[in-house]
Image 1 (cartoon, rainbow, N blue to C red):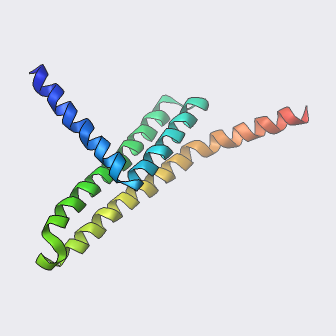
Image 2 (cartoon, rainbow, N blue to C red):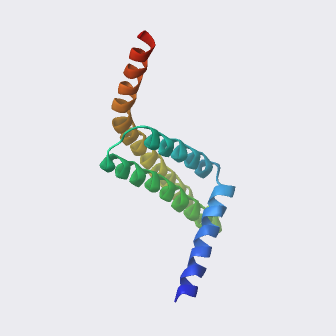
Image 3 (cartoon, rainbow, N blue to C red):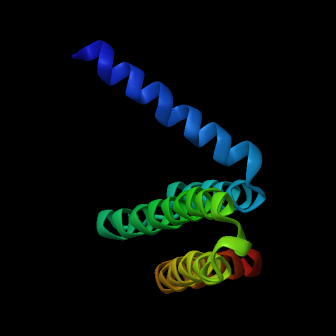
Length: 128
């Protein structure tokens, strides 16, 4: 049972590696996620805010992986076999865009008050 689980983990990490190596957007989203996580560590966020940010990070990365998988699958069909291939790819791309825009919106809602307070504190320190 453990051996089977470890084998499935191996496949999962192989998939993550493939997404990271082959997909520029996945690499960009991963770097942005790391920057956001560093911001979460530096700023005094509440536990619920941290959880929400982690959920949206995971959602965006998952959507990008699903988009990649579906693109590879639809490439097997080729547009000459069905005209919906482009539509399917566009819809998956739109899903990634919507999740990314949602993540940015959530991030701004959570981070802006902390950043405003941080910059006010910096101004006070500079005037002393």
